[in-house]
Image (cartoon, rainbow, N blue to C red):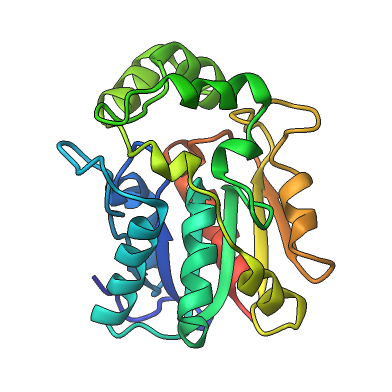
Length: 254
């Protein structure tokens, strides 16, 4: 889907917005509308293994392959590739495969995994331990109580209930596969891949302290990572879409 003719003086950008765990591309609907209203081109793909009745015997590489295929099939270039939550690992691996298509990678309260780590290892130990007890055939989804208190801490119960009703389990391997990110960190370190980190300051889906989103993950992106912050919690794309859209423009522009 493409945007309208720009209505502001800002340069048109091409955004690919990648949703986090349990959600689909529709999670970005309000932000996408705000960005298109400003004249930008916006894509909101749904990553393999997400959505109702999704295939659950997939690997992390399968998720990345679906994103790379989307970029290629739509012949996208000069892309501001935005990832939310666990999608930080999808955009990092996709950038390894098609760096020539990427203008900048933007991590929005997203995991920047250490080279060799699985996603689960980036969570506090007590949370990571859960993955050893999940039936892969059933996939993984957080209990409502966890989502309500940790990720929906700034919304009312009705909104939290609605958001959770739209969620679906994801493949367990997305959390447990170890990730070789040597190429990604080389691209970042040599300046061949530009990065931004966007932090919603009330996001406690990663609990405060040593395992908090920020500044832990931004530090891994090096001294030239562009850092921006805004009010909001984990689902800021739902609660403050206009503000997030503005921040993503700041994160993606030259």
